[in-house]
Length: 410
Image (cartoon, rainbow, N blue to C red; front, side, top):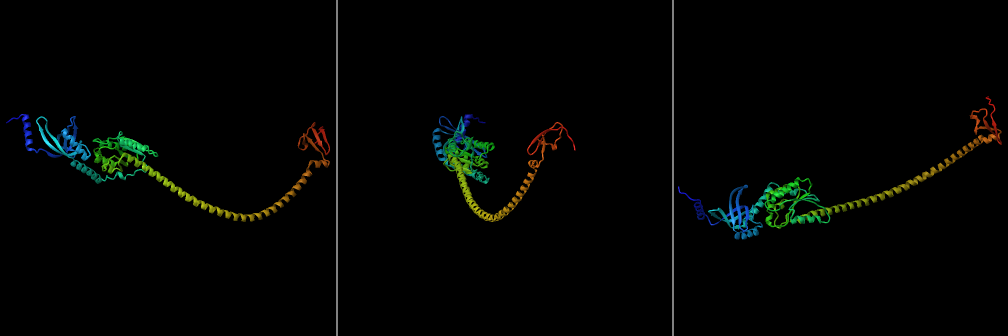
């Protein structure tokens, strides 16, 4: 049996590939890894997946002089840079090196495929959410009339977050309470980070009125995470109204489409919240004006009723008083006659009593020749007398003092 060295086998493989393969092929693959070295060469790992399982994998490279032009053309056309996680249509050459083995060299890229692929995935996400009846679920939640307790998902260093907070705090009239739940707002980690922030808000003890997802401006490529099914589903199922202010000029992302309210920028979200307060304030003033008018009309009506009743009472009182005046006049005459008769009888009675008092007056009795004997200034009729007691005897003209020398009972 003939024997070959490893070098000879590799040379054989290389010659077979060169003789039997086309100079290049257009191949669809997903970038799973990408790095650019100091010299500007780009090294990638390309994969093909089915249901998240890798079916094929191979190394590829783009030399620096090619990478500079291709990456710029790709980003200008798609709005995103070459990065892991996206599917690309590559023009590839198959290379085999005796030492480094099999690899692929990228000659060209068709950005139209990636544009179409991203659009396709976006439409698939929308259709899936619609089929699962999740697309309008968050929109059906009732946004409080005056949402003041706001949970904010953003990067704490994002300029958009600062603009949002400044706008709310400097509105001059209303108070808003905001709590930041920090999250990455771009890159491969963004979806997981934002979903975790939503989970933290749901488990928070604070009774939030609404949730706001905001970020500042940036490249269109940074918005791919907002088109993913996983994030859109989390937004749709969230139990609080969710507002977005992602800060982009292109068509709305899927996250915008499923959110309760979508606005272009963080500042626009703040203005939306403030305008809601203004509308409620205006509504209160309108209600107060209506209430005031109703009470004014009611007061006017009641005043007229009161005037009517007052006039009726006054008239009835006058008529009643006339009737009573006549009756009182008759009563007064009767009372006068009765009083006079009563006084006459009383005068006669007083005269008789006066006569009786005169008759029993001690002076009258003394004038008749009687005397009055006293002991200690009191009549002896009701006192016990003893021998030696001093007595005073009063007549009409004299007072006679005496002493008891003997007592004789009869």
